[in-house]
Length: 153
Image (cartoon, rainbow, N blue to C red):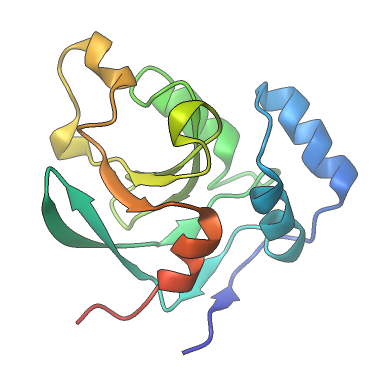
C-alpha cells in the first residue's frame, strides 16, 4: 500500500524550515527537511508501526505528524509539554492517538533514529529521562519508519 496523507498543512519552503530550526533551537537532519518539504503535518495511511521496548515487540499508530507552523499539533507546543520528559537530543515529529510523541533523534550516537515515548513507561527519576531504555525503538531512520508504516496484523 502506498503511503498517503490527509489533513496536512500548507507547504513549507527551505526558508520556513530554517526559521523553525532557529526558533526551536534545533538543527533538523536533511532527511527530515526533505520530508517536511513534501509533507507538512497530516495523518498517514497506513498509519501503524511496530516498535520494540525492552525486547518486546508491540504496535503503535500515528494519529498525526506534527507541523512546524500550525496553531494546533505543532512541534513547538510538544517541545514545551515534553521538554523535561524526553531526551534533549530528540524532537517530537508525530503523535499517537493518545498524544504520546514519536521522536526523531537529532544528535549523538542515536542520531536519525525514531523512538516512541509512552506515558505509562515514563521514568519517575528525572535523570533517567536522558536514557533511551524506557523508549520504544521504532526505526533506524525517518525513511525506514515511513516505509514501514502498515496496517497492523
